[in-house]
Every structure is written in C-alpha cells, then in structure tokens.
Amino acid sequence: MSKVELYAAIRRDHRAGMKMRELERKYNVSWRTVKKAVDSVWPQPRKKLPPRPTALDPYKPVIDEMLRTDLDAPRKQRHNGCESFCTPLTSWFTTGTWTLPGTRG
Image (cartoon, rainbow, N blue to C red; front, side, top):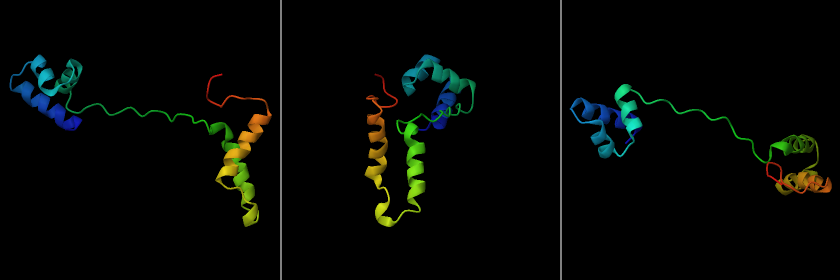
C-alpha cells in the first residue's frame, strides 16, 4: 500500500467514526502518521539529500588528468583501470600518509 493510499484509508475510516488509537492499531502506524493523514490530503514529499562525498573525490583530478593525457597516447601506452587506481595510491603511499582519505587515523 502506498502512502497516498494509506492516508486515504485512514481518512475514510476516521470519517466513519474510528478513533485515532484504533486507526493506529489497524494500520500499524504511529499516532503522528494518523494525525498527518487526518490533517492533510497528501503526504509530505521526501527530502532531497545532498550527495555524499566519496573516498575517490581527492583523486578525481589526478585520474581525470591521466585520462586526458591518454587520449593522445598510442593504444598500448594508455592507462587501464588498475593503473588508474594504483597510480594515485603509489603517489599517496610515497608521501608518508598511511591512512585512507575519508577515514580516521
């Protein structure tokens, strides 16, 4: 049952005379949900969450630059997926930083 259908059913039963507590038990929802359904016709839209940063974000400029230079390189000299992953890691390990970006420690 969608949320719109749930709200409609709760409003219909409420108009028929069911008490709020009975609606909670019948539809297995909280009193807040019953109150929202009785007060408004449509449920509130979901909130849009901002995109979360990934662990790859610090290395995206390096990888993009490698791929841009590979456009002009001969086929056998281009970076593959493993090299695109391993090159930033090797430069990162040689700097003396031993923790992954985005982690503690």
